[in-house]
Structure formats: structure tokens, C-alpha cells
Image (tube, helix red, strand yellow):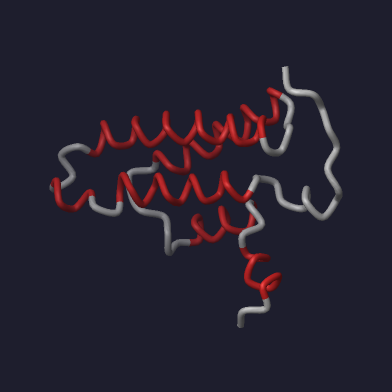
Length: 115
């Protein structure tokens, strides 16, 4: 059992852990960024594999890194699995932007001073 440890407000500012956001976008890119090469023949299998991989990965990240409850981690993992399982690449879309914002990845640019 993972103990409930509260994190500082600055670290909990995002709904998803940044690694979860990276996993969602990475799995989406891996499974659907090159889907054109298979002429969309493997889209059902790719969608199921992306859903399963992302759901399990985000659940583990949210429990281990963010110390979310099982219910909260499961809800976030289900959301992430559905987003990653959509049979198209979301990287440059509004949905991809939403994932970046929910994971707090947009703040990384400001924290490093990169413009």
C-alpha cells in the first residue's frame, strides 16, 4: 500500500503528473504517428494497445509519483487511456494541448527561462 503523503502546492498544481502527460503523448505518437504506413489496417489493434499501455502506465505513475488514491489514479488512467486510444495522432491538436496543460508541461518552459 502506498502511504498518502501530501506534496507542496507547487508540485500538485497540475491534475496529471508531468510523466503521465509525457506518456500519453509518447504512446499516442508511437502507435498513431506512423499508422499511415500500415494503411490504417492495424488501427483497432493499435487503439486497444495504446489504451491498455497508457491506462496501466498512468495508473502506476499517479500512484507511485503523485501518491493519488486508487480511485483518483484510476479515473486519470481511464481518461489517459481513452485519449491515447483515439485512432489518430493528437500531438498538434487542441486535445494534445489540453494534455500538456493538465500535466503542467506548459510551465516547464517558463521555469527554465527558455523563450
